[in-house]
Length: 360
Image 1 (cartoon, one colour):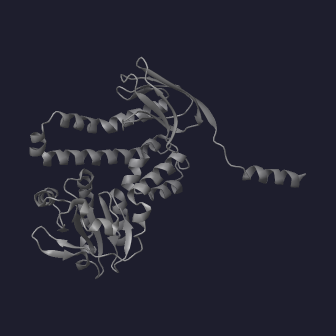
Image 2 (tube, helix red, strand yellow; image 1 turned 30 degrees about the vertical axis):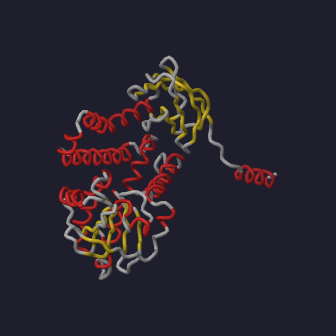
């Protein structure tokens, strides 16, 4: 009898685990009559259902995994309203992106609204400015946008601390991994946070990992670097190899003065440079600019002290085909032996990696 029970238990254990299904009831309002609207399962980025706004209303009813992270989005709109399938009916106002539902979902929405309010206000400000006004206030606007990005990241990192015993951080996981690196997933697993095994966390980690270091880019890690030779702002030719060796670790930073995310990342790189330069950390900027004036102005505005080089060919920059660069910011970290050890280190991920190398 014991043998039979043991055999049965082993068979059951071998069966795939099926997530518990829970009914959902989503309703809402929108001023976009006739426009298509999508219901998406953020656990795996799959489309659950779609409908069209009729008489200013829409609704979805069905079953999905219990506690699945879900979202509703209008066609051709990047903004989505996120919520959890916790069995409580939810009403969504797509005109102002607010929700009424369970306490959990209303808190998720409150965090989302608070986080995005500064960026929404900034965009509204830009819409009210002429092209000439934007150009004359470019430096101030870039600083303002950079401050918004920094505050958004700090806000999300705080959510991951304050709400570690709830599912709420899952709604902001992609931003968290962009700042802390995909490897932060392992730390969350070790800490056994409540949402550690939720499929939405792994999906967010995988999305960010693919974005920051696609397979063809990741293939460079472990390989010897390929040298680059370009001119500095004064027209003097320089090679990356001038900095490699003699115990130095070199970050080759691919950027451009016109790239908003690049400029937003620069204070982080500057902080790392100031902290570890005396210990053997070097940075060399490789710009994808085309206009020398804009390039030089960007270096001055951002107060970048390290060597800058460029062939001023934009996306035809010599570095692009060599390192498979199809988006910036991007970077490679080269060890003292000339081997590429890391790619696309941004935000806290860069700080953490340099701490591993140089210590505090």
